[in-house]
Amino acid sequence: MDIQYLEKQLKAVADANRLTLLSCLKSGEVCVCDLVDVLGLSQPAVSQQLKKLEEAGIITARKVGTWKHYRLVEEQSPIIQKVLEELDDKPTCQCGTCGVEA
Image (cartoon, rainbow, N blue to C red; front, side, top):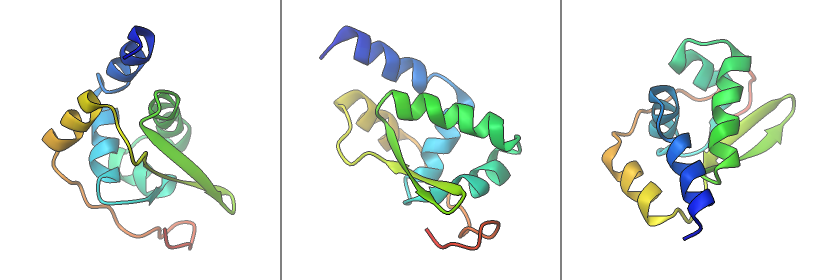
């Protein structure tokens, strides 16, 4: 495995907020508006956390209207897979803010 890629992934999961986001995404695709509610942070702050996970290749996004919906990348590195296995699933509600079901 590429050392720089591994470093980026490890840095991405070395944060409580990002680990919470990953717990939410274990159950499937989630709208950023629901993740704002889970973390209790502003939408721009949550988006910055998601961007770090996306840049590390751990999650992916698709745009639905004006909102982004995030999900885990199907194939994870063994290290990230192990991290995900250790996280409890944190169910999130269906998207109530943007009016679109994930």
